[in-house]
Image (cartoon, rainbow, N blue to C red):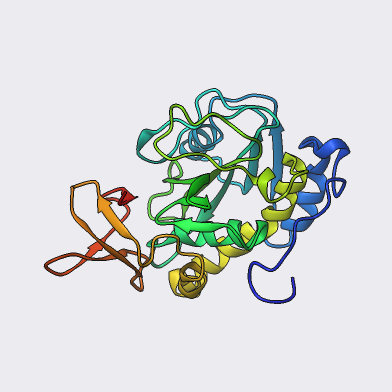
Length: 274
């Protein structure tokens, strides 16, 4: 990639696979990612309960080889805080990257992943702390990160599952707290195959950079796309304030009436004030 982060334009609809089909890009993704993750494989399945759930089951059973698992349809997709994620074939892209990781500090991993996805897809995509992709104040996609200790390997690197769901086509927002956006607004011919091919290698590279350098390597890049900075926000505990970026570990800073509050992703959810 040349130019500044986020300057890359989407590849054309015929970039990989017939009609943008996911199975058609599996080999191209393996070729791009395997130099970064030796032993890496790609699996594409027609339907699954949840790609994150399946890889977590494997991780707990000691299967920790690096893998990208993609489901054309998920029947029980999950988001943060147990929320469901609707996934229909062709209308969304749902996948999980599983691999062993051992960073010195796990703080900010979801922000680093968001940076990698947003920069790979379009300059207009913003990031809502701690794990959402936004377009014009609407939710385009979400990130869910889970870890498991491999069976019989206490103290070893944790098997890390990085899941993402991205809307590609319009969807109803009737059951959603935040109105949905879709990638087709920016990339009219967006299909699962070319989209996944475009973001797979940058995602893997970003995760490895995070393992080496932590959130510090991504802080400025996150701030360049921070959708909340300078906005009035209300935390899930009722605290109101103004978002003021992140600290060195990726915690959200909120200026309240009394002080600057440091918010970690494990404590609260954040919604912009009306």
